[in-house]
Every structure is written in structure tokens, then in C-alpha cells.
Amino acid sequence: MLELHALNIADIVSEVGSIMSVRAAEKNLMLNIKCAARTELNIMGDAVRLQQIITNLVSNAVKFTDEGFVNILVKAEALPGAGRQVVIDVVDSGIGMSHAQTERIFDKFIQADPSISRRFGGTGLGLAITKQLTELMGGTLAVSSREGLGSRFTVTLPVENAAHDDLPPEIEPIAAPRTDARGHILLAEDYEGNIIVAQAMLEEQGYDVIVARTGKAAVEAFRAGGFDLVLMDVQMPEMDGYEATRLIREGEASGPGGHIPIIGVTANALVGDREKCLAAGMDDYMSKPFNPAQLEHLIGKYMPALKA
Image (cartoon, rainbow, N blue to C red; front, side, top):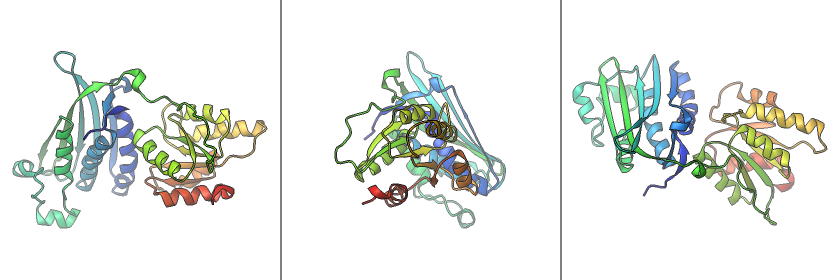
């Protein structure tokens, strides 16, 4: 069953790219993203399944590419009448496949050549599942490839435009605070899938949560006051988390309020990330994905009075 919500595919692709960039960097691969204008990619869709489709394809491309590049290309196309479709291409310079292999690649009972499986860890069921998910959304998944020259996987999905009013607001409307809340947290995050997961974790742990979907919105929400801690995604539209944190700290320095902990949230776990977060004025950082125990431990570290 699909769960359709207003979303922007560019946000999903950006999130996947951030996560997969670590694995690509480990193999010295160039991971490139090229998307159509954001206004063309506002659609009604299932964010979780879309992310799984794109993640599976990019993960597969990185796995089977030893040198060169992996490109993620996204465009929107008009169909006859009033219809539209989105086309997502994942192109790599990897080992490629023979024509016979491309004919069987989506069969869940077919595995790669044994020598390839030993070298790369096998193909598993990822592509078969990806094809099923694509077809569940009314789309198609195709492949073109040549041995030694790389592969191109193409997802084509019919889409419905998301009306501007359907898109999530940059700052959620502020509801009446819970009287039993352990604390009030500002969650600065632009990707809907991550918002759903993190907000559910925080609310389960007893916190009030307000969501800001851009760095600029996070600064505006913070200035309204009332927060005990900020979870700040470092990569957001309009203004990234580093700049948003710097502006928040500048405001604190000249204002009457005290120091509010800011925890950076990054899709990477690279050397230097912590230092970059601290230099911007953050107190600490954690990398995605994280589990409820990790989240609660880090919050408790900076909100000890509210830990119990």
C-alpha cells in the first residue's frame, strides 16, 4: 500500500547522495547528482519507497564500480494530455553486463557470475525488489549495459503534481506545549523521511518537537524561543546547518538568553566532521542513521536535568 505525501524528489536524491558519498569516497569514485529545477520535482509520492528504490540502484552502482563515476540524473517530462513523469537514471562506469545478463538481472532467483559474487559480495535481491517497488508505483525499471563499459538503470514513474499548499511548511505550526514534556526540541531537517523517523523517536521519549525544514526557518523558529535543545541537519536548502548555527550563536551572544545545546546531524561520518560542527558553534554531532538509544544518550548528555 502506497503512502502518498507531497514531496520533492530532489530532496530524496540529495539525501541518498549524502549517505552514499561515504562509500563512493572509500573507492575514490566521483558521485555526481544533476536534477531538474526543484519546481518541476514537487510531486505526490511515497517518500520511503522512492528512497529505497534510489538507494538500491546507487548502492548497486557503487558496489560494481572500481574506478570512475556514479551519476544520478533526474528530470521531469510532459506526457500527452496533462500527465507528467519523472525519469531517474543511475549511470556508472563499472564492470557492466552482457546482453544475456541484462535479460536476467531482475530475476530474484538469478545471482551474478560466481567470480563476480566473490569479488563484489553478490547482487542479492536488491534489484528484484527495486523492480517490484517501481511497478507498485506504476512505473518501469529498465537497464542498458555493455561489459567493461558500465551500466545505466532507468526508473520512469508517472507522477501527480503536488499543489503548493500541499507541500510541508518550512516551520510546523506550533501547538500548545505538552505539560508533561521532558523538554522542547527544535528539529531542523528538510527530508520528510528523516523528519518522520526522528520526530517519532523524540515524541516516544517524551519530548515536544517543532520541525523547521530549512536553515533559515530554523533560525526564525529558534529566535521565537522556548527550546531546550536543537537537532540541526547540516545540509538543508536556503541555508545549511553550519550557517544557521552561527547565526543562532550570534543572537545568543547579544541576547538575554543562555546557551542552548545544538547537536549537528550529518549523513557522513568522516574525519573532520566533528571539528567542522564545533567550529560552527555546535556542541556535538551524530551521523545518520541513528537509533533511539543513541539519540536519547546524546540528548541526555546535554540536557542532564531532563534525562530521567
